[in-house]
Length: 312
Image (cartoon, rainbow, N blue to C red; front, side):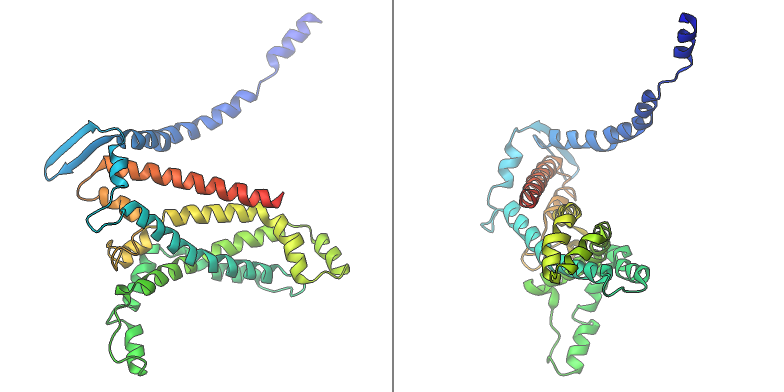
């Protein structure tokens, strides 16, 4: 009996170790390409390290000196990091609000069992297609459309709506509106599909019971659909917010990296890109990156706790 048990133990294979072996590549890639650069960025943020012409200055330890510079007023009298944070928030809000409203309405429309819309796969493909276009190509298209010699100005002049061409890219409200419109067009399809998936995962018997009890569509939405959709909605909202904080390519291409007019469309990542350009100021770039990480973490935690708390 003892020999049999020993033989069985020898023959038995522990599969637990294979799980660890299979996830080792992920951790190796994460440490090399994510964790190490993050630690290096934090390290550089405490040093004066930049290029002045052909000369490389530093690295010289300055402690919190780079952070102090970020919160110091410039020659124009404002603090760039605060102004560009507000710009980023405004650009995201004016694009995200209509995005969520339209995406939710479309998701409810396509998943409605009362309407029983046919060809859902076709509509999903159509509304998702703008997301496949590169943001830089989208920005170049709008730049060409709304330039002073572009078709929009020519159409307005030919119809007699205006006497001379309007420089849309020199007006604050038009530049911000164009950026918001592009972000809306690129991302509302993705948001719609995610919300549709969430709604379709809700048990249909709940909707049928609510209808039999005489509940209105509004009551069904606020008391059944939205509470059960909340995990998906929180995910979509937070990822959209993180994408908004990292907004770069659209305003960069549309304004040629200048944030015109008067830096009113300059985002945080565009500001970061200025330090990574000619000067290669790794110290200031590291400080901006750390602040971006802190802002993202605080906002994500606040949104998650607020929405999840209200859900409870």
